[in-house]
Length: 382
Image (cartoon, rainbow, N blue to C red):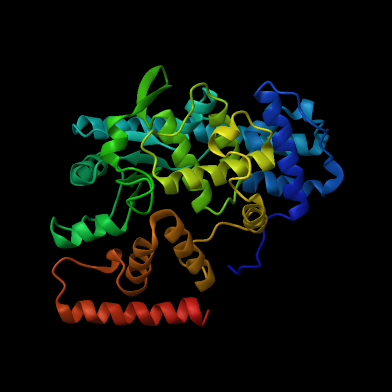
């Protein structure tokens, strides 16, 4: 996939932003602004942008108020129905995964996805399809691995306890498990680095809860949910409208705030994400509490949004060298320069996933050489 590949035109994205801003105002009980100009882009391109930015359920719910063209209404409602069905299936699978982990006696939180949808809308299916995101303490990883594999999710073998596993846990934040019905991202840390998001221990100690299928499900506190939503929007380079919808809905909830112990990097990150959300979908309630006027220059952030908003998601295999440099630059802003440098060197020279227990020094050196050669071939020579 080349960097010039696009899934939506800028004009179509502009139409979808305007429609999302209007629909969100109706949902939040505010007076909508100007009517949406649906002639700003071809219907097919607008449909592509709706799919890319994952806002079909919101737009379908307010299609009449939006004055959406008939042909687009049919397409958007079809996408919304599919998203809702996928979200319901994901909710059921999430509860099953939680039950498996809790039966092993491990404290865990359901984060993002289903939990975020339930918190912001009351419906666990409101954000559509996705992965199941679980947060556990790093010392509980082995017990959770056993619980999930016994429940039917397949994941790669764990490193034996020792130095390699400690390094793996330090340099990575999650691992994946799959089954025919769902996939799980098992986190022992929300962010890529030990800051600015607090550790799993801290987050578990002040957890909140949401209701899913008439049962309380542990999740991040409201303050930590807002922080995590802003973190993920920033680390995804403000690529998707749905992330800003999440932030807008969180800002509208009573009592929302930042954790009292929020790191200064986290406060800056939240201020930036809230500023972009307000510029695209606002005016949003309470933004001045997180982004006082004049604190953030929105121009470079909106330029980043404009660039990212029309592009497909990169996979790890096809991200160009410039894309990786951007990732590490963001890491330096969010986690500090030492953490970003360590992450870059690890990814380039010896990713933890390439290490096998019991490797000799010669084998490790050979693996480093292979990684450097692969880096040059894929990232530099292209």
